[in-house]
Image (cartoon, rainbow, N blue to C red; front, side):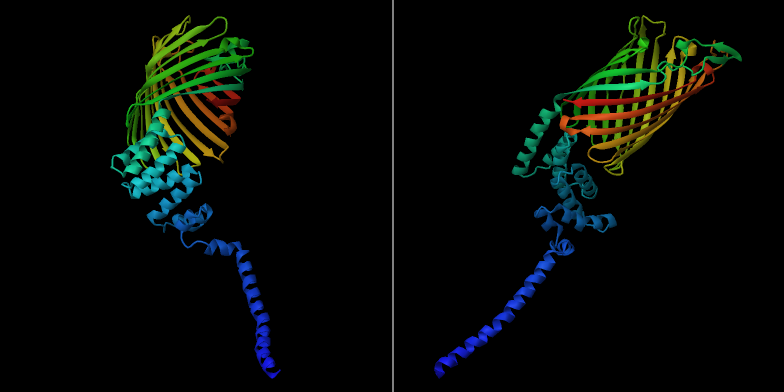
Length: 451
């Protein structure tokens, strides 16, 4: 018995230690559970590097680690690359392109960055820009696997660039002053009163408009493409049939992408039928060369010169030659906001001196994207039109000053590849001859669909 009891005593001592061990295990488990339940601890200690978080697919963690450094300007170039990859894999391609472009400004000879950016450009349908980046990488003699990857993208881009595009639109609107007439029945010309009939005064009406657009883009090589298109719009007023209009236009020409410089040299033409029963026609033919230059990631400048010969058929209106030069600057500080301003000058030469005029104007705009569905735009335009000679109706010179304001709200309808627009336009014209003074409001709603 003594031997047996001596062997049992250590066993009882071991059993006395078990509750302590179990207690310690319980405390450790509780502490571990508490840590796991604190999201702040997870955010701070889960990943030691953004590359690890990116590999795990935790895009929010990468942003938490890198965005503060980038905002403070304490980041390394590789941080921009990791943020670009993060946004690319998350499907936020505009943000990805922004990070890649910032990195290319520091390391312009990085083929990996250009390749990643090209894939984001491709995902956004910006095929020409994607092709330019891919060919730049290909010119550097990349490894065979990368070369095959680029060739597959180039083949897909070639198919997409050499395509037609097509869209339809429908618009309903109210025009408060269809005929741009004064809002009074009496005007003074040369200090003499003239009584206007109803047709010469301001007349408002409801209208419907149907439109279609066709586009064509064929890439010939890395720098050259052929671009063109045509549009047809029909406007029908409910009561004022004399202002119904059928407008057709077309343009076609070569485009040249020379790095940051882009040049487009189209020929343009149009034909307009005005009126319902007693119609007359206006035709035009001309050129409209355009140039654009990307100064940096945020700023760009552009210019356009339009010259056209305008002829009238079945009308007392006189033929004319019109020329206009536009110059503008554009600022896009982020993916949501685009603003711009510009100047333009124009000249219309008619067979009659008093129909000829000079135009000088300034305009500005701002486009803001609220989210993936909603966006808005504002624009303003002011111009001064000075006519040649002395107007026989008044014995004085005619100078018009026109102010135009517009605001629009857009809603994307991605499930139908369509967009809904609601807009308000306001025009106010002051003149040295009261007969030509008027104001005008147009409220419209429009839906368009791409095919």
